[in-house]
Structure formats: structure tokens, C-alpha cells
Image 1 (cartoon, one colour):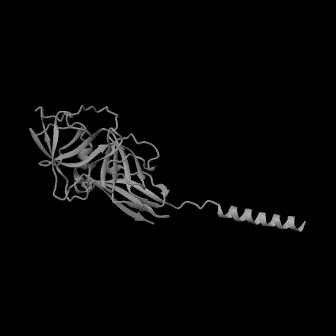
Image 2 (spheres, rainbow, N blue to C red; image 1 turned 120 degrees about the horizontal axis):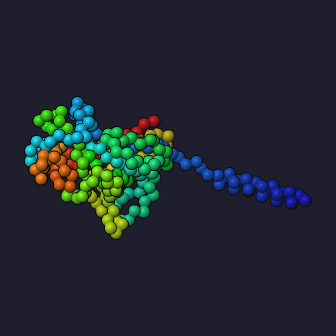
Image 3 (cartoon, helix red, strand yellow; image 1 turned 120 degrees about the vertical axis):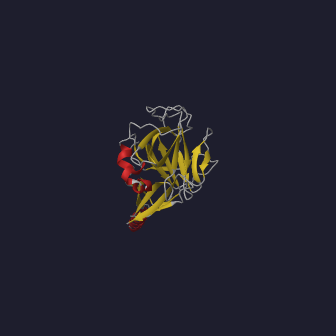
Length: 264
């Protein structure tokens, strides 16, 4: 009887010890917020009201119209992050965490994009994935008369590609990592598209917020000059026919970069 009682006590204690040691430790988490910033919107602020109202573009000034680029109006669909690193030649086997609760289909100015903060596991993240629509509108203003603004329909592909304002297709997904901006080729492997458009990595810390800003101009001190080339000579902007030639400041090596900040 004593032996039976002793064995029962031992088994009970062992079960209690096993249960306590197998309780799941709560996962440590932090917060991440993704947004877009456009320094040129502040630099050239007086003309933004005119730009946003320029849905009926005035005539171009000649075969070449010199303008300053202000912003772009487009559709960012979804944003993801991953702790793994996108690398050229490899397949997409990363574990992506989606930062957008639903796929956005509303067209907005670049600087108007701010997505709600999301809770993600603590760790070091090295890659960002972003989807956007094939068509967009470039916002520019005339250099010789800043009150004259244009909203130019374009596609993400070649300037000679077919262009339709009703196009709802998606452009190739962009994968940013420490090695640059990548896309997937026909074989499903990453191909480097732009070495300089990179994210240097970010850390998600417990009970802190990381703010990841996708920055237009990559820190340049001034916007690019966009020369609108009127290929057919009708003095109107025709997407798929006319084209843009860029003249950018020396400190603008790439179209955009990422800025990471932290808050308690």
C-alpha cells in the first residue's frame, strides 16, 4: 500500500514537472508600420493644389516640354516583410508576413500611403515585397510657369507598350532586400533589377514600433527634370506614344530607398 502511494506521488510530480516545462512560451512581438514619403511634395508645395486638379492637361509647349516631377498617383496593392533574404538566382521560398489586411485598389498619391501598424514576431527582417498596378500617373509642373501642371498616364513597362486608363492588371512584383530590388523571371527565380534600390534590414524589437518609410528620390536634394517628348507632334500627352527623358540631380542615384526609424 505504501509502495503504491509512493509511486502515485512520484508519477504525479513527474506529470506536473513535464506539464510545466512544456507550457508554450509567449512569442515576443513588436510593431511595424509601413508608409511612403515624398520630400518633393514639401519642396514644391505651392503647386500641389494645381497638380491635383490637373485632370484635363493643358497643351504641351512644343516638341519638348521641360517639367519638374512632383509625385506619382498609383495603386500599391500589398506589402509584405520577411526575415529571409531575397537573392538573385534563388526561388521565392521565404516566409512572408503580410502588412496589408486587404489588397488596396484605390489610386493615391505616393505620399498619401500609410498602412495600419501590424504586430509581427521579434527578429531581424531583410526583405520587403510590394505589388502595384501596371498603370500610374506622373505629376509634373512646367518649369517656366509653375502654375501649369500635368498628370501624365503611363505604364510600368516600356513607353511604347499599349496603354489604357482602364487597365487593372498588376506590374511585376518588386522584391527589395539588402542586395537590391529584384523581380521573378519566367523560371520563378529572382533577377536583380536595381542594385541600389535596397533595404539595409530592420529589427523588430519587443514592445517597440519600427516605422519603415519608402522614400521617393532616395534622399535627393531636388526633383528630376522630366522632358516630355511629343513624338506625334499633336501637343497633347499620349501614353504609349509620347515619352519622358529624365535629367536628375547628381545626388539622385536611384528612384527610391527605405528609411527605418524606431518608436517606443
